[in-house]
Amino acid sequence: MFNSILHPQRQWRAHQSQPQGTQRNVNNILSAMTFVIGVVSVSLLITRDNTTVTEIVFRAMQFVLMILLLQAPSVLKLRYRIEVPIVLSSVVLLFAFTALILGDGLNFYGRFTWWDKLLHAESGVLLSMVAMWLIHVIMAENDKYIYFNKYFLALFLVMFSLGMGAFWEILEYSYDSLAGTNSQQFMASTTGSIILPTDIPLTGHEALRDTMTDLILDFAGAAVVAVVGFVNHNRIVTRYYDIVQTRKQQEIVTA
Image 1 (cartoon, rainbow, N blue to C red):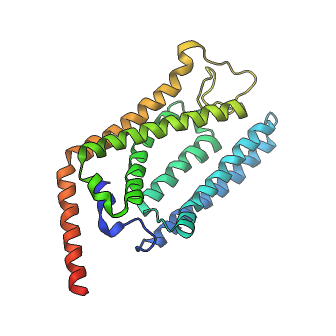
Image 2: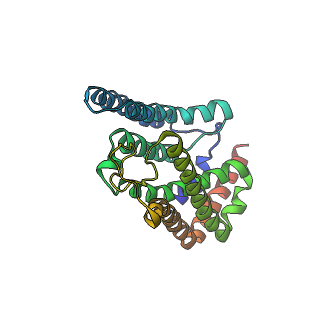
Image 3: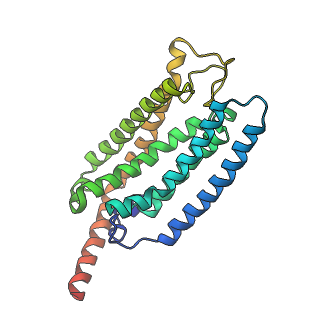
């Protein structure tokens, strides 16, 4: 992961080349799957006797949101001239698919009690990748000074992932309060996002379990990435420096 992020041939600006064909294939596959699953899922809900309007609207929103996310890389490139690397874009979209389409759309959160925890553990790793991308986008050519400081880089990856995890919990809390959903899984009788009138809420310390466990998993995932990067930092930076020097020499020769 670190080598692909630090590789100068994969600069994340719009003027650099990018395997657009691969990105289009990923988007097309996910779009087709989202559309098919969305139509089938909503159709089954409509034909079911005990389905509520809230449940239909909530499920439909997940599929619409996924379609919008699929367009995000193109919007960033055309409007802001920022190009998201194919690896990061694909990982983010696949994560969104497992969370929105499988998690909410097909109710994996309700079917598998461990599904939410699996995604939060993965999100720590994913957010670390996003953090490194943001360093490059914000710092541009000066990003090497941050990459070369392994202490700051490790700390930044962990704190960014934990901060974004906390922000996500705020969003879940706000959404649950407004829409009456169970995103923070404060119900004792279900882990699904939709709450039924018969569901029983958790009380006391147990009501905090999901939120705190999610934050701990966000931290753990980011910490793993930070430790791996810290241990291998010298080798990664040496390779990065050699590639940069070789590229500069090639530019001088061709100038």
